[in-house]
Length: 117
Length: 247
Length: 135
Image (tube, rainbow over the protein chains, first blue to last red):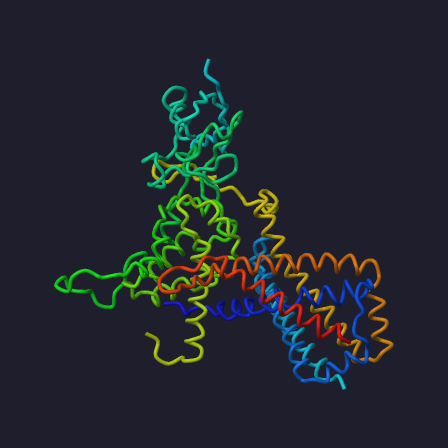
């Protein structure tokens, strides 16, 4: 009897990332990269953003916001490459690129959020 | 003067042809005819060598699945008049090797269906003296939809992942596994998970959803697969957090 | 090419085209939905760049904001916003499929599971917007 695969773990990360991405990213994207730059709404100033970041909860929130969606992307993009470009035989390379990228982004996010004064 | 419609039908004779080609036939366009009637007209009156599978002609045996204008359909349930003025292209189901004309080789599905163990698995057989299993309507409701599958394989013809990944179990096999997992009389969920919870078994599914769209019996295999993924995930958590004692 | 024998005919297997996803609209819609994940990852890139700019001081942050205003970025980000909203709507509409919930034996219709997701989405978005807009 073959051992069961560890796919469920990655699928659960993908699902969690999908929920975070669905609930939070639209409003963040709309405000920070559309409404504020185009001047539709007044964004928070530099000092007030730093003030918000002083709360540890804000840093935790941003960490989750940056990490889980990356794992969502990793899993989904991996299968898009398998099926869309039919390169499943390169699966070792693809998995390293996708999940490795997500881990890299997570580490980067942790480092940046930790090192803000 | 009856109206006519053109049929473009795949012909493939393995001993003669290198690859399949289309042959045109003109058939009467009768308003109550289905595509299967047109094919039988061709076989009876025009070209007796045309080969195709069919049986009940009423949508319950699952034999007559083919691609009609690129969509997987039961030819006994697809009205010819809906395609007027035509032409109507009839091809064998996609994602299966073509055996001859409109007939495909389905043994891959049969192997995968066997892996799903679509029967009631009991730890110990219940003796006859104990009588029949009792089920409430609610218990029946958890799996009844998935039991409606007629193995017509339209879902396999619609599933792009099945076409791309030869190891993927496919919609119907997984839906039937879920049908038994959800059955209160069954105790074989662990056994099925051992076989199906592989990256090729169920995890290759990316929820395209086309299988549910084409299913003629509203089985909703896509829903069954997602339910199965959730079950497999819960089982994984349990074995990860409590690795001792697997049933 | 092996010739066919009476009991093992030479079946024909068509190779799947690289452009299979263009052949039917449902397949194209599926691939677009999957590609939305690229824009999700793009958002994380922007977010990390923003945090880095915040860390490096007010000048860096102003430069970052200027960069966001360039026409290319605006175009890319409007597309990103559309794709991320597409991800959200398809995600909420599909979640009930995995979790058929039952109350007293009757299955809850999908709409009753989908609608709360949208309410929560709206509530959370409003909360985030309020925190960021009150300055």
